Image (tube, helix red, strand yellow):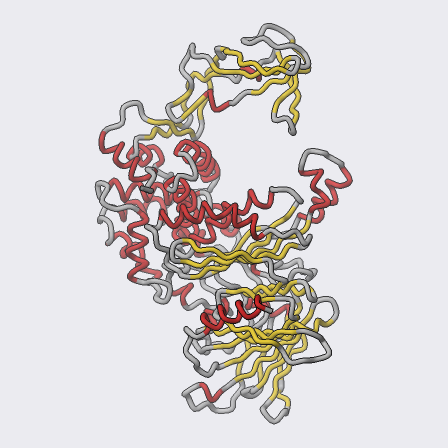
Length: 639
């Protein structure tokens, strides 16, 4: 078919960029024949002649990863490997002994290893259940999700050697991955139309970094600046979603391109989506509460790892579809965060990630960078790109993160300590703070850099400079990175890292937000206007589909006229803005629908004294320097 020829041409062009070198291992996964419910056969052919060393025929270890980068959890992929056997070229069998969950001891050098892979999506595993975006799925002729750690093993010490993967699958499907690949028509056989797709990886690390999803194509491709982006979607319900997801993420991706100066550090990127079908619960989500259905939904959703996992040129997503647009609403924020990981750690990273030890992983202390800075840039790129207002950024996003960050046990554990011990208790309980406190720390670090350099540099400038120096293929030194980072800015920046990132002091929110002309208000009493529709003299009931409240009872005088049965609508944003709470005596607008007619009513709200917590307002009279830092920080950078 023309589509197949087009794909082949596209994939061959990608493949030609990798020099033809003999791979050390060629993995064959047979996705045409699924055993039982969800097992497939994998054969690893080992080409010892591709290794320059003279090797003695001695016992060797074959290993599956205990964990992979980006998950910060134990996976034990070896648990899902069944019936592993090893052979010499002449077919004679080699003795195999399994040790622990992930290690197979072979009595001699094998020329061929065969085993069956069980998928993780349907596995009834309680301990160390694999987060779905890092998992594997085998659904005969429907969907194959290969997070390659769950399919392909390695010989420790040989992770740097090139490897190939050959997938054999039904002819109506297609594999999408960031790996260069080539598709050929498979041999004519009783199994019907089939394809063989071969993928080339620089080495085992590259293979681990490039998941593959094989599915009946629902794909959309587009360009963001210099980068070709492909969205591939498998939706259990069969609802085609790639075009709708494209509409949702395109504007945000363009904002990222502006944020990064019009050029992206990668030239191709794949988003792989697995969308779980929950459409039977659509009515529940839209407000029609049925207790039996609610319990059924909760039972199904608990334990599902909805979310995403970043890779160098791709990311995987496992998300619920309730039959409405909810799935699309969640997608945008998650996609921005995962895509921005191309800066770090997929760009900038220490040797703990660059030479990741899959068997006995050592965690990096620099989660403040990998996750905190990434999550911060996810929001910042949207405000600088004009997708989000300054007010929404400061008073929704940043304030919310500050409130969450305040729950981190600062005095008990430094952020770097939590980071380095994130696989263990009690530290792993705080992992979620990398997106909250981590992002707030990054914002304060950005303001500190602008302050110390008098607006000459921003956090993005420093990350960009360091990325140019190290990039995706060279690691920075885990132990000395703070010194390297400070060297790009100002000696006094070390104080920030020592006190707030490596240290256990409370974050300097008031000081650093003031650099940009903002006042951080916490535990202060202020006079605030009260929402006039929340008066004790008024009883209202919410009508979700109308976006308004209906008046149930009027018990006494109100600052606006209303009767039982009327609809009331009020925009609470009128009560406060970045400039501060609404001044005393000023009116707000309350909209009332009476006899089918909407009217505007002016009402001066009553006031009360309230203790404000974690709120940010503009300073009354910011200096020129403060205004300069603010526009450098949040100003729209687009011409």
